[in-house]
Length: 594
Image 1 (cartoon, rainbow, N blue to C red):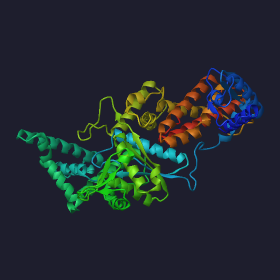
Image 2: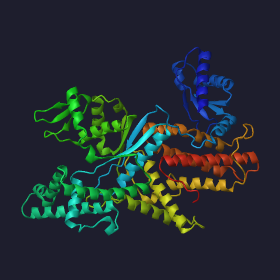
Image 3: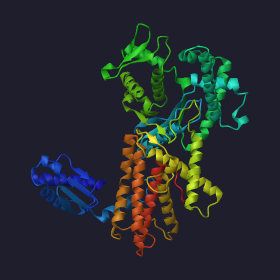
């Protein structure tokens, strides 16, 4: 808000001229609702530089600002608070400057701007995506879009965990019990079919453990000696040695899973620019361990294992290479990070969207990369998020009690259907139109419910509460957008021309609405700085509340003054555009009718 800079300069200048003292900073806050004014200057901090009566200082500065700043029409003083009233002309001029900007608030990525890679999703190929993956995907995708809107170039990526004992468990269960069934023969999505065999493995494993315990083995012995586990371990060894039959089965079943993932990603509305696979990256870091040994970043123990001593940084020692020369996850992540910067040399930072159980891992990873001397390592960020719980309790993949992402999206659409039918809002819609709308509302409700919460907080997700047409919900905001589109359809005139600055006297609610619009560009920048879609979500809710207050208190299409009517339709239109833009940053669609 440029007028704020003008006011700040005037306050500093007035303070210097009146008291012969330079004022380093000026503290502003929003004017409280019970007082007249648009912005408030807090005088109390100034007493450090000029002793005196704060109310008297505020009075003198207020008189000075009114003389110096044309946009300030008058002021009032409440104790040590100077409340300034901004002219209507200023707000109308501002509105005229933005109303025909298609992507108001967005900054185009310019040559030389920072480029970021955002990693999200990164699933295992032994099961379908679940509710936890939904939060991960929604956060990663939204942060990517927000960073882009803030002026950064962004590459979206994931690393697919396509190797390891968990993959072999599904493969072995399918070999034993699958009877050569496929996604085509069963009609199941490939990720669901493979996930069923992961659950089947666990069931068979438990049977064998019980049998061994009955034969006199201890529980630990039974778990370690169960034949099905030993066979899975042998399958992993065969895969690592390149056994043709094992690798062929691995490629086939992973292919089924990828096809299933693609459907889920499309329905969820997320995408990627580059895919990395753990089977390609798990050996990458070994070369850099050697480099680190030569630089003194790592040291080798007597058994041959390689470690990084982080005790001076308040952490512990971290292994980066086992005694037998095999890599650990940290080794892989070091190599993958470096590989990404090699693939995309303009990357100046990375964002890892991973649950908060990995906080320590990323703290160590980022520190090691800095020690290895990579300049971009200072711009690494772990987008750490809390778990998503349901009223029914915690999810467990291997027991088949996970809330499947596809099933949840269907449930959300069905919930939207039942609530919409109850409210009777869709007269005149065809069945196809209704189905599309239920999906838009249901998915919007799911996304908004998850994204409006600070990523670090744990969420208790209640599908029915999220599909509420009142309160801080996606459907409430979507409904307001649809209401605005209804106003625009009913407007029987061209509302696209600019208004003269003296043709409109603003209603208080109009002024508050324009003030809220003014905050959108800085809100995008704040959300990007904090990697927090919640900042965008809650801004949008505040904007919608202001619009509904305006809608309820001010006549729009019923206004007799033609210029004023056009202005109010223009203002409604701009609010609708900003709602749509803000929701696009959250990956949420808005319907024209509801």
